Image (cartoon, rainbow over all chains, first blue to last red; front, side, top):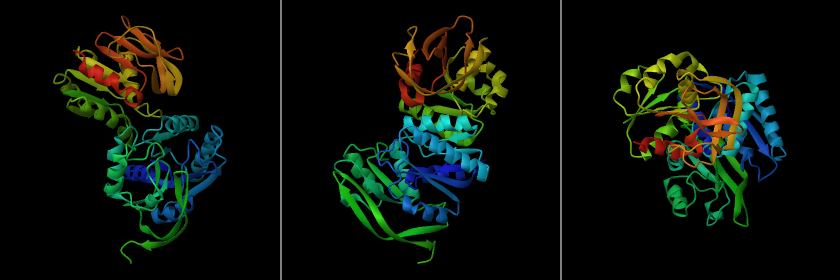
Length: 225
Length: 179
């Protein structure tokens, strides 16, 4: 099938993209919605500035739009975004990285049904620790946002790896950050033909909430230093 | 051993509709074998006491072409749990009928009759586009959501029109545990 990925740039949407390719589907477009509401129920993209770079590394076109992030109205904005993917790329369905959020899954399913296309959620209800470990083992991922005690600004920019997974698990935090405790940014994946190298970034930190911003980076051909 | 029969025509959908069921079965301490609806699952029926027929994507109706093939399961007298499209297949084979409906998302269940597999589940996650219209003879509605039958029991056959792997893993584990 010709599919779009609802792409956040994080580990889950990238892992879902890998699964879609692994099962023989073509990913012809990435759809990304940037929410102006940091507390959006639907969209979490703390490092949305890098998504065009990730699309370049994947070699897949990107449609990026913004939403005010008002509850329920943002679902209409999502429908418009998917409709644009259907119109411009003739997609048969969308792939999401949903793991546990019934709120998000329900709205994506309704939207796809309304539009008459397939919805694929290849990580849905999988074991969160397994999803986290698979992401860490297969991709180069860093922490782009944190929003849960006792995670601190020291965790921002850190590699999402077995050590991080063990640490957050010891705090009782979902190892896949399903509750929004942390957000991730994928710098390299088996689906990338180029990779992202972070040169520098700044940290924004307040009230146990933080994110990286002002990111300076390079796009490097794999195998070329 | 538990036989799980997939109704997904797209293998990618099995990550969403079969893998979570398989995980719950394994966490219940049971071994399982998974077969596709296009495979010869009938030859496996005799080897398993419990059979689960999984659901599939809202856009997927390929299972309609395979309904008759599932007769071997209904005729086996084994404990069978049909999930969503699996429930639709069982209901049709047992003499019931379906109608178009749309029930998507988390819904409150209204319990109509006690059932040891259903238990006291209060909420369930639905991805339903076909609902029971006429019930099979001798069956009973155990619960409803928005006046749509959510769980129907017919002897050893349980027809679960919601997706228990999302919010109600206990339905699957109780089904596996009942003797």
